[in-house]
Image (cartoon, rainbow, N blue to C red):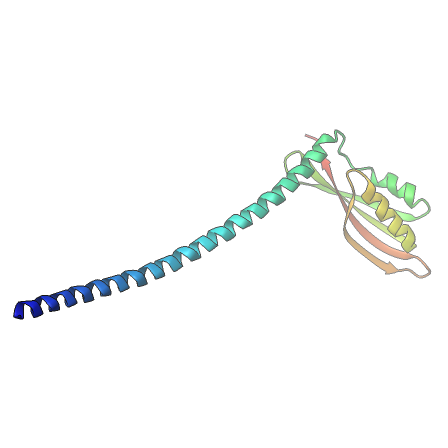
Length: 165
């Protein structure tokens, strides 16, 4: 009888030890899996960010290829555009030093100063210069009302062009 009671105690002790070990393993697995899940979420976010960067790079690559197909890829002379669309206006144009961008390309910059133009003349001119290929883009614009119906102002325009290598 004593041996049966003793063996029963041993079984209970072994069962308790195994239950404690199982609970410990369960808690450790839960903690480790939480860390692994957090790591997977971070990797997912990084992959999503990289996919967005790739999408943007593909769009930029497409834009560069479009420009590369145009053998001239030179913006229309801004002085010619001002003569055409602002023929009676007092406009001063200053060509600024081009900025280098990616290999083989640069940004041509020009500053225009004008006085006594109507809003219609300014908006028509801006629309026409942006219709050019490659387009002139407005980077800065300041307009002030003149002493009569006209506006005075300053424009900073940029256009992408091939570099002279």
